[in-house]
Image (cartoon, rainbow, N blue to C red; front, side, top):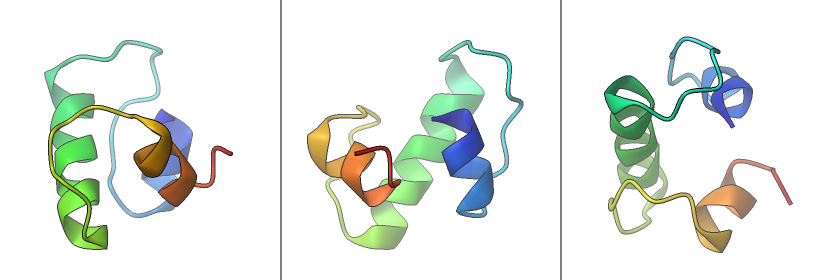
Length: 52
């Protein structure tokens, strides 16, 4: 997911840790693509990131 966020232009460290930096990037990504910006990588967010 961190790699996908970076690819989408939301730069975070790729360290395998879902910390505050990653959560902030998820919220920013969700807001940018019109999803509810809740910081949770559920099915809609994962799909928008191209993870499934």
